[in-house]
Image (cartoon, rainbow, N blue to C red):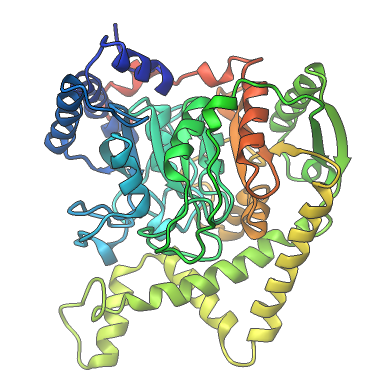
Length: 495
């Protein structure tokens, strides 16, 4: 029996009941990577020997009768902007091409404590800046459903890897939708937790007030299981919130009685693809059939989300990336005339166009004379956006809507139109600005066979409610079981 394509709970059951060893599970998924990744390009680094050694250690401990963690024997792929001791963390950038962290991120410690088997490092847009996974300095990742299309970004590698069944679980980071948008494009489940729910210690910073680590999986149960491991207080991250972490998997199958679902009228206007709108409305009808009350709510300042985000995020990025100067961190140019020339040449050589664009935007917004007009104003808009969500959640339990305005676009289609690319995150950015949790789960397919994502949002630290609401819908449909043509992915890499 093949283990490829089984959910995390099925694999966990096979392992605990002795039907499969951790080595057998890891071997099958590593073989799946070998068969398919030439076509998908989801991964930047795979250490087969280290992964199998880790799996063998898990098997040894099981045979010794030791108590094992909740992810024992499960293969997990981690986005390449999360530090792991002794393993390259390039952020898909020439700037950090040779960087090998001397320490583990908090989430890596949590995964190892849970006895997960870490099998690969996922591709991303450089420093997590992008919506298509085309901005990687090393290679663009392709959508497993259609290799001519983008998997979304910036966690496109993590999403594509789960969709191509290279692992049942993956870890990504979400700054403006970088988990939920690729999850929607690739037909998998992706979740951004509340800001502060998961420690950012060891996550290479892009925009510190927006970044959040979260799970990818083939079904809602997998995300609940992985979030239980990732979440929790960490004193090394001052933004980590000391709140108990519920056992999400224990309550997941309990439907929410009297669920009130909010529909944002601003989310169904111009720019929304007709097929996406139809699929999302069908999902909302499914909630009605389950007895949920559906109410219209308004987020009047959501139209300013993209503008506010592209002031705040680049401003924080310009500050965070200032450390990569060839002296303190990162690539240093071989030829330069003086110190200033060394800085300029090193950064000019090692940063890609999108990173440079955002550094310039942020530096301008923070510069003397423009701070009040741009950055401070954007922060005030951010507060209004959060207040809109607070008012909406006074009337509803969750907000449902599209995760993306369209299905996956073709690779290269938007690369020369940054504004059109930025608008791809128009439905996801608000959750990052407000710091609330959100999840995208499959809810349909277009006529071209591309996945469509349903986004659910909830108040801060209501991940349990969010996951239960998502599972209510998932239990009524089979979209989460849909899978790209794995045999086709294993064919020739010629396109």
